[in-house]
Structures are given as C-alpha cells and as structure tokens.
Length: 149
Image (cartoon, rainbow, N blue to C red; front, side):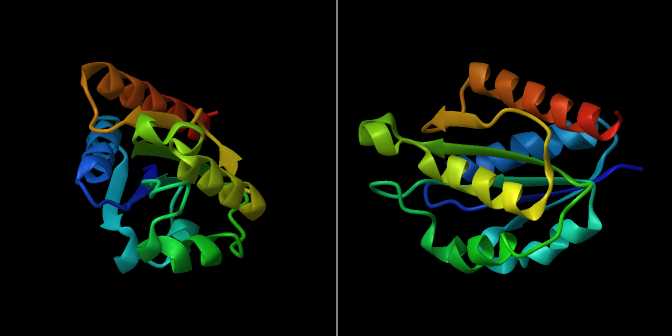
C-alpha cells in the first residue's frame, strides 16, 4: 500500500483546508495517509512514507511560517531519494511578488533532499474554492501516479 504524510501550517485555517482536501483525495486513492500540523511534526516522518506533502502559508512579505522554521531548516538535511513530494499552499495576492513564495521555498528544500517532484505546485488565493479543489484533486492524482510509475 502507498503511504503519505501531509504537513500543514495555518493561521486562518485555509492551509488546513488544503491539507484536508489533499488528505481526503489520497484516502480516496487508497493511500494510507497521516496529516499533521507543522509545529507538531519532525520532517523525518517523510523518511517512512512514499509521498511527502507540505501545505505552507506565506506570511507578510514572503516570510515562511514562523512555527515551521525548524521543520523547514531540518527538511533540507534529509535524504529523501526515492520519495515523491508535492507542495500546495494558500496566500494572498495582495502581497503581489511575495504571493505564496513559501510554496517555492519548500519546493527548493525538497529538491535538496533528492526527492522527486510528483506534481506542479498549487498556489491558492485565500481559501480554496471549487476550481481550487479540482486543482488539488489533480495534484493528488499526479502524486499517486508518479509513485506507480
């Protein structure tokens, strides 16, 4: 059975919603999945699963979630060769060039681990709407398909 771990950081609840959507789609694909909040999670959990997902928010002018800084720093030090990763997060277009930059920063951290990108990043403005849910379902389907290749 394919396994996955979804980690989220949230202030407003939007990224928890994103994580819930991804987790539910993974469960619907018969993936054994666990979902946790970033400050309560050690990135080493990704060493024991096939699919690794982070759902971060971007704070203010491009800042990573403060409660996720240790997680972010430690993630880059892992060896996740053979793992599939994906990043999906919520932000606010009000911040223009800083919109959802944490998503890109977590992608870079995953790339340092040797993990394989399983789907294009998903960036959502504020809370997910129906179109965003469809994007997240596609994102999840691509992650599962990449594991099965």
